[in-house]
Amino acid sequence: MNNHSSLSGDVLQSCHEALRRGRWLDARACFEQALKQHESAEAWEGLSWALWWLGDADTMFAARERAYSLYRDANDLCGAARMAIWLASDHLDIRGEVVIASGWRQRAHRLLEGIDPTPEHGWLAIHCGAIAIEIEHHPTTALAHAREATRIGRAIGNRDLELLGLAMEGLALVSQGYIDEGMKCLDEAGAAASAGEVEEKFSVAWMFCYLIYACERARDFDRAGQWCQRLKEFSERVGFRFTLGVCRAHYAGVLISRGKWSEAESELSSATADLEASRPAQVAESLVRLAELRRRQGNLEEADRLFRRMEFHPITLLGRAELALDRNEPQLATELTEQYLRHIPADNRLQRVPALEILVRASVQLGKHDQAAEHLTTLEAIVLTVPTDPMRGSLAFAEAMYLHATGDDERARQRLEDAMMHYERCKAPFESARARRELAEVFLALGRNESAQEAATRALEVFDEIGALYEAGRTSALLNTIQPPKQKKIHIRGAVDSLTQREVEILRLVADGLSDKQIAARLHLSEHTVHRHISNILTKLNVHSRAAAVARASSAGAL
Image: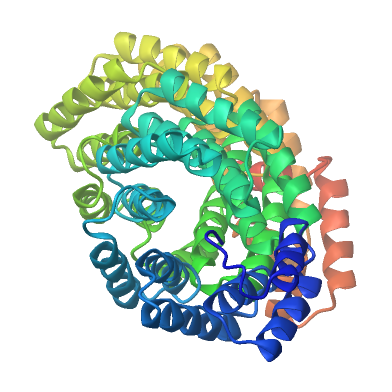
């Protein structure tokens, strides 16, 4: 939207003013009127932006291509390159057409060869950096592009390029493990954008998105919450559903890690609707996180179905590996995790940590302790360069699994206590409760049954609170082996025996993670009837949640 011609004079100026103010329908009508008076590349370009904001993709592509042709015919190489850059971006983001996007990107490179630095050089650097950091997971490459964009922006006085380059630099640094340095860049860019230093609205949205991406990777929950609120306000004000959708999906990932699963479900529902309407090629970003939420909730069947819809998304590979461990399939978990790591470069430290932890656990399950030790060494080398609580928690947990498997239970106890401390500091209740349950196993191995019962009980309370039905069931089964007081066991057994056959059937489906609506469809009942049965179950078992009911019935052997 730069280098506008004065061809249509006041008309084009009025059209661009409507764009600047976010009046997309007015801008569209204005540019269409200008084109009736006189066809120009500038008017087609402006119209393409109004259509882009309105989500009219097919017409937008046609307008961009016409602007490109007219710029090329006029030998305006920068104008043609600018259109090529945005056509590349849109073919990738909107249609998922990687090959066509690459072709337009290469065309932009060719057109700009031999020309002194212009805004188009900076925008091309931004787009190349975005591909490196978002798709290819190469933070070092993205960092070089980001700094080039910032350099060009400063040299020519373009604040959008300068600050967007700074935001991309921040995300690249965070991905490399330089979290403090990267977050300072991101916060600065976000603050400048909020203060109105950025001209283009899409630049503001882009910066906010990079902030939230970085927070999700670093599990910086408080920072993510603050910036996501700013993004919501901005997106709702300008009607930018795409940004709201993608960033909501990433923010939902933060909420999932924080144990706020109802909020995460709401965000993912909105994100999916926004993306299906505006950027269907990006809908995987919300669906893979929904699959991970289902896995943590204990609905393994639904999680597996969702994961398989986005088979090669990085989160899918790790999610399916976790599912394999849940199902005692460590070899499959190993293969999926190794496939993930083949696509995550060594300099992308943050995204390699969860995979290495899975490999340690899978190797332990397979009895391959030497391999587990090798993976631990690699994991430790990364964590030494990224000494944050989430990373330290992952290392401590993985090391404890190895120590417990090799018989060093006293050191395993210490490392699990360390893991719990780190996870609680970064507000990750699911991981903290999982470490506490494993601590109960270690206490049992040490002959400390009372401590084991206390640890397992506390883990069960957390799993119950956040709605992790599968983990609650596993923890309840562990508690049952610790031999609770005989009277309590008799009382629980009696309460469970009072359940009808239909109530037990429904409770089994609840344990599988099905909703009332899904249970009703499965059993050919009304939702009201299912809800009434569940209410009766809670009353009979004297509990206040589905997870607690599943845990209690499971501990009595009813499920």
